[in-house]
Amino acid sequence: MDLSVVVPTLNGRDRLAACLDALAATAPDAEVIVVNGPSADGTTGMVRDRDDVDVLVEISDRTVNVARNAGIEVATGDAVALVDYDNRIEPGWRDAVADGLDAAPVVSGPVTPIPPSEADEKEESDLVELKETDADRDPTEPERNRIAGRDVTYFQSGNVAFRRDALRDLDGFDEYLRVGGARDAAHRLARMDREVAWRPAMAARKELPTPTAADGGRSAHEWGWKYRGLAYRLLKNYGVRPTVLLRTGSHAVGDALGAAKDVISGESTPTRWAATGRDVLVGLTGGSSDGFVARRRDRSPARNPNGISTRADRAVAKYDRRADADDGKPTEVDGATDDPE
Image (cartoon, rainbow, N blue to C red):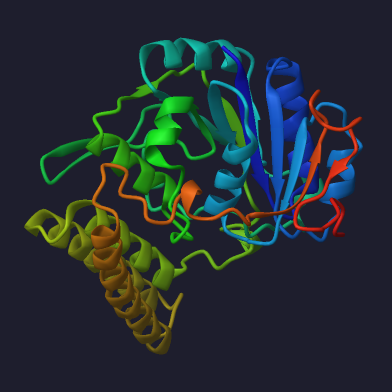
């Protein structure tokens, strides 16, 4: 099995270096592709100085789903893994990927949090997908739900591998979504009856962001986009169903109660609580409207009107060390050089 590993990153140079070190030690035969958002911390130079990165793709977007798709576009392996820049794969990961993909078109494994190091206390990144799962959920088991009669198995967005045909049928990730892109992909895999395997040996450790950068430099609760993404993907994938409305409402009620408790305990204010409610309503309204539009635009099983096939301008520059590159020199894209920093 030829494996490509896509690592999206943005302003995470030191943690990215640790991630690449782990990949080089554990999966030395893998094709490694780093997709770098508009970083301002020397990420480009660090990556170009390494000889274990096959392709560096520079993008101007700060959205993780764009970065994922940009990496998938240039990957050549018959299997493609996605690894977050702050994840460090464990010994046995490579064999677990191969074993899982022998059994299913998609495989994922556990991600165990580890404390942030002193060196990274001031490091922040925006290229992170917000999680909408229960923080107390057992990280050693996959999350599963049954929605509108369909069983959905979610995968770890920063520790997952796909067979090439599964990514082709998905058309990658939906770039409308700033958050929840991996969960949207899980819904679409379930629609296509594609199984997601789970292998405990496909393990990674995640270096947690600092409290001041709880979601990679954004505020810990970006309510508007959480609910825009939730409404969009549920309406896009399932249409108007009682279970969809109930699921969305239960999220909103739960978060409203949590925010009210913060007001009572003095950790928040009534004004902030009201502003949060406004953000939720605006997000739900916008996401529902856009979800209806997306459902009409793409009625195929992929349900992805904003996927890989919809654009060809993600990369602003590319540096390719693979054998088919011209003497290992930078490959220019749209007239840009490969070193925008």
